[in-house]
Length: 287
Image 1 (spheres, helix red, strand yellow):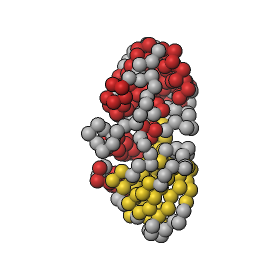
Image 2 (image 1 turned 180 degrees about the horizontal axis):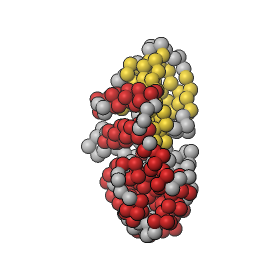
Image 3 (image 1 turned 180 degrees about the vertical axis):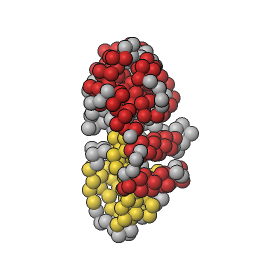
Image 4 (image 1 turned 30 degrees about the horizontal axis):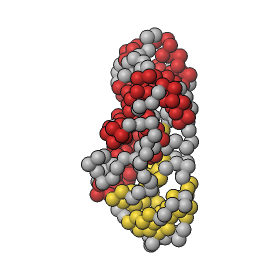
């Protein structure tokens, strides 16, 4: 696959390695999860507003995206559907499936999908991700009960599932990674996550993907609708939210670990992003 402006070495070797660490800071959130059991559907059309993972426990049929050729599936398997895509499906008999919808909070672009990294909708045999079925069954049960800590558990299960799926597209797996969308910028994004305690210059990020600083900034703004610096702050704030809820670090310690020289500045931008000060956010979500 042609990847304009990126060296072959980056395309072949850094895509999957750069994406995996990003799963921890992209602001991935499980939106909802459910189970459905249908005797049969002759033909249905779906338009997803979120990235979607389907685990077919029983059934067979075909699915196609837009005007592409139909792709057959047979349970047990997983089918990944990107948001904003229009899908047509037909079953041959009873269908039982678990479905999870998720979003990336760090991008406001309704067309930007984490699943752009993959050639979709390619059914994944359940044997390649053996934990997928149990994970999706657990998330569906957890989502229906909505207890204390449910969202944290759902987001954790989502990350485990995505890591398992992405491993099937590793160089040792059954198919190649196809860098598209923000995957082309994955090495630069990885550098942001590796250096949260200090700023990273745009020319350095641009060099990581083989682009000039101007071309890199232009492409970055086109995909994420913010500057690289603004996006880096989003990553820092997402990490701050995680540290507030999972550690006993003080606000000052968290602020300094994320490269903010002054705690009052950290407090101000955190509140502008979440509506709460760090102290209030921690109290509210740990109750």
